[in-house]
Image 1 (spheres, rainbow, N blue to C red):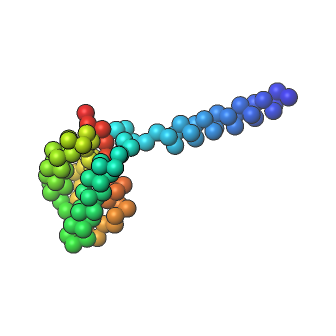
Image 2: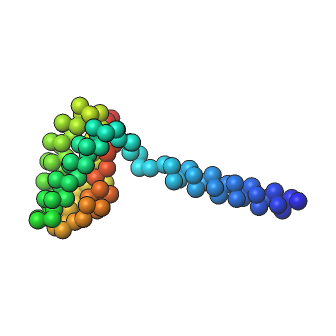
Image 3: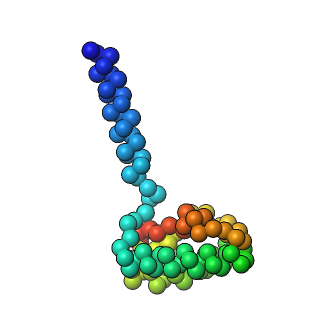
Length: 107
């Protein structure tokens, strides 16, 4: 009986940890409303089109993010580069760009 309780508690602990870590996302990550999603998607698609033709330098990315984040203040979020300081390679896919540039709460 005691062994069954230990196994049950271990399973409960494992499930709790799984739920905890799967529900936690990157700090600052937010769920976007329709307007925010439109703005974020527009940025991602435009950036993907640019990197399909040419590699973007870290300086170009930083400049573009600063410009876009000024406009995004109205929508109460910003876009964060998770790999700041590195170039975006030519031919990067939409999935790569979406993973690299995430929406976040304003500070």
